[in-house]
Image (cartoon, rainbow, N blue to C red; front, top):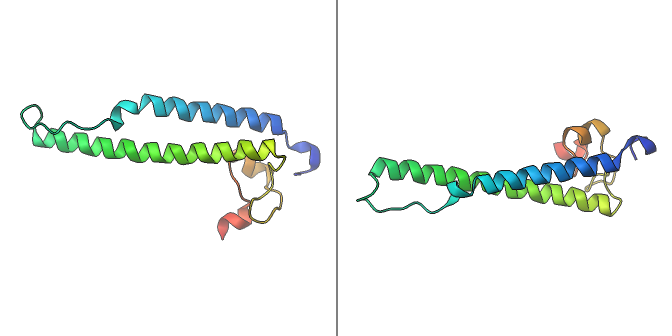
Length: 115
């Protein structure tokens, strides 16, 4: 796998665990922005409500992207557990070390990613 000994799976596992913890931390910090917006016109003006709704929509979209990133990280950790890390999930060829260093959660080689 990538010159057999050159792939330090433990280092990638630690990096993935750190990335996972960071995504979870960011998700927790953004919880307030995803809360329902109060629609009582007597308390909040129309433009303020619109701004709050837009902020909520942006926070929800960001939360969805974080969920996808967590799924990618968890899948990579599962590949490590199954001794499949470093191999493309599409063609089963080795993923270039530089590609894994850039994004350790990447599931595909560059050829399959371009398709």
